[in-house]
Length: 314
Image (cartoon, rainbow, N blue to C red; front, side, top):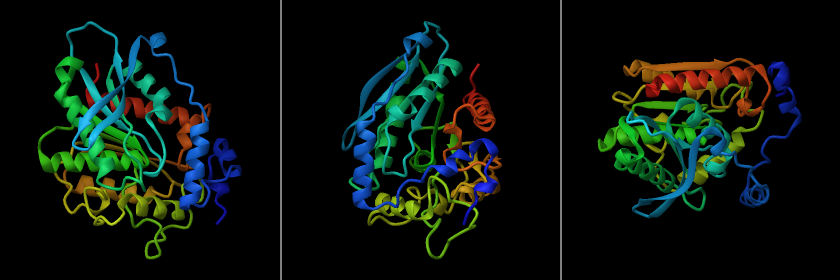
């Protein structure tokens, strides 16, 4: 179905660029090869008065690579912490792809950020990706004093698959009761393995651009492998949402995840969890990455205000 006419005027060029090719194992290998050949230009943290370093945090399976962003200040005041999880359909991506955004957040909100280079599917299906994120959360809590982070103000967040992992991390942290999370910042999170399958095709007006129904099913099948299709790895299948941290969920009217995001927000509210839901009209998956548009500027402002409030930034 052609839904280009529903796109925001400034986003219409997105319709002229093909979505991710129809995914197969061979196509995924080629995508990774092409992405790996592209050099990501990292920003200069020194120019912003912050620090960035590659670290490796311990886990039961070995070491998990992360990028740590930290304000360069000598204040005795503890800063909030934020565990960030990148997107990529559980198949692609790295912390470097979110470097500009994390530099911005660290510099402007004064928060310490740990961006997780979690293991990717299909080579590493669940529980590996979630275990890596949990190890990052554990490390931030365990090193809060050295990092000058307030352990009561550690939040989690991410985009797309990263948002799904952040939501899963909040569920796991609640259930295990070892590490606290004060906030969930979820941008069009990938929450429900049923979206786009033959029994749940959904609204035909969503999912034409960037991330399609086929991509979604390929991503979920790769991520779950033979594991049960249940929470926490599939947040939308959680039977109980009470006791989770407050959430801010961003989604878009043409995003494949729109309805699962709205449904999850409604379920959080019904469970007594404070949840803000923002739906951007005329936007699709990845819309906020189109620089120079009014809608991406509005998202940036909304995102920063939400995270500032959720983490209690001064």
